[in-house]
Image (cartoon, rainbow, N blue to C red; front, top):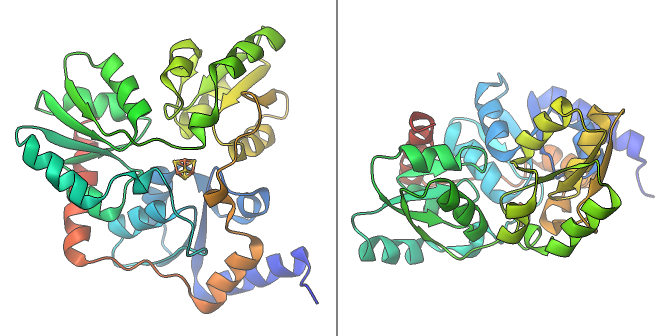
Amino acid sequence: MAISKEKLKEDIGKLKAAKNAVILAHNYQIPDIQDIADELGDSLGLSKISRDRPEDFIVFCGVRFMAETAKILSPQKRVLLPALNAGCPLADAIEPQELRELKEKHPDAWVVSYVNTSAEVKALSDVCCTSANAIKVVKNVPVKKIIFTPDKNLGWWVQKNVPQKELIIWPGGCYVHEKFMLDDLKGARKNYPDAEILVHPECHKDILKEADYVLSTSGMVKRAKESAAKQLIIGTEAGLIYRLKKENPDKEFYSLGAARICSNMKKITLNELYESLRDEVYEIKLDSDIIKKAQLALERMVQYV
Ligand code: SF4
């Protein structure tokens, strides 16, 4: 017989207390997971929270590169990813060997990698960035030539805003954000003329050019609170809209065109979370040398923002 949702939630709470664990959930997780999480946020924000929380047992409800980033920032802690196959095609768009070859071709360039990369790619990078700070990081690194990985749309946005730098942009992309089309934006303008349009920099450049704001998910959470607009159109994964509605009940939120779903982000259910806590799976294990080098790239990011 299937266990009820309420019973599962109760059992998760008991296991969490018994094991002194903390549950972190990314903004794109399903509502059940967002509701039960101790902390909700974007990938890097959650990794910083996991480093600062007193618990040394972290259950990261997100995708693999996020759980790896938490492990890199807190190597002494145990980090679990409840769904073994929760990957990110964008993070997988560049292999370490491909980056090594590119570095050999451009020895005078620095590598700036988006946090949506594997631990190995971070370890090969000079500095990391997020969608919120990529422009500042690229502007402030002490070289002109930059290999930017792995997202071509974010790379285009950064290059547009930092024309004094020369970016060699890796052609990766997020299949979810690339589903938003310019016609979706035109339709939204027509149907909601008073609405503000917020889009994520992983969207196509045509969309980035036309939106009112280009923001990371944490930037969208902030803007939604501060904006005087009563209607906001959101160009990112649909899971964020659940949080935005919950935190701003007096405003209306609509997806830019059809709701776009990241299947990788929906792999963790209450059942997976319960089993993960019960069986202590799937633990993130990384080579200590990779951790050290990737840590350096993440720490450098702080210097350049
Ligand atoms: S939304 Fe895109 S970048 Fe984010 S986890 Fe899914 S595939 Fe990766």
